[in-house]
Image 1 (cartoon, rainbow, N blue to C red):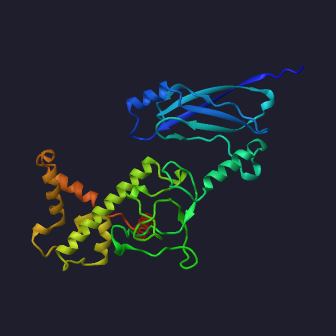
Image 2: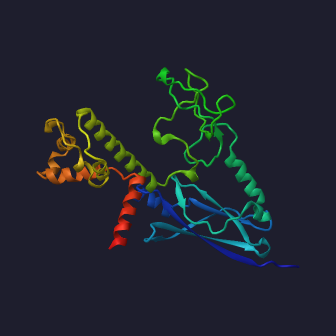
Image 3: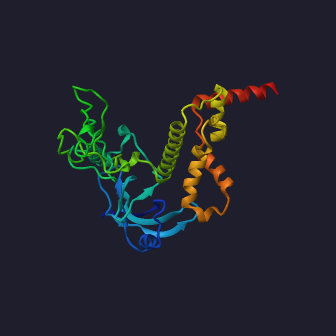
Length: 318
């Protein structure tokens, strides 16, 4: 009779919640409940273990991650670990930061080839159903959501893509068709509702930075429109003055030929002062200076590179 030894394999998982949702209730649920399950797959055979819950071990104060640990007993004939199936039964998304092993398709171990085929089939999609935010499906469709004919018939747009109007494809979303134009798909309810495969979506930090930059761009456009509509006769005296705009912001604006009442900075400062009057407490000049910094234009790449070359030449002359 041949007796096979049992080997204990321990897996350690670092889990991080989305920024801004680490409430005491969620942390308590993460620590006290069995919600994270691991399943090991052999690299040499198609065998795998039964899913086992990972137990909370400790908190990593440096990275803000929750450390979990799970132990498995496997026979010596199980072979090396080829893949780990991670099942999340928590009520929110979690982030897995590290993958220890990865394989090219041609180097996939025999024991996990069928697992990889199933994953490939899943992420390709089947052309049915509406995509959800958490899904990782790379299915493609034509551009047929550029207008909103149900709310405004004038926004009806032709379908871009196909033989009649060739155009690169977009990720398929599967939203319902418009009643006024069945060839068009209804647009997302919000700008953030556009489907992006989960692995390609912005992280919370990058999404926040993008939203901030978008808001600042809108404010710059607003102040520019306000200035142009207020006085079309104002102009810069030279190209050097335009170039200085990216260094000094609106301090270097063209001279006004209109009364000070239509000054951009004064208009915006007065508008905001009415909303936060109790917070300013007489610090109008400091507030205006911060406002000017907020509306400072981002230097275009061509101007930025020119300034860098000029700076380099000055250093070389010294």
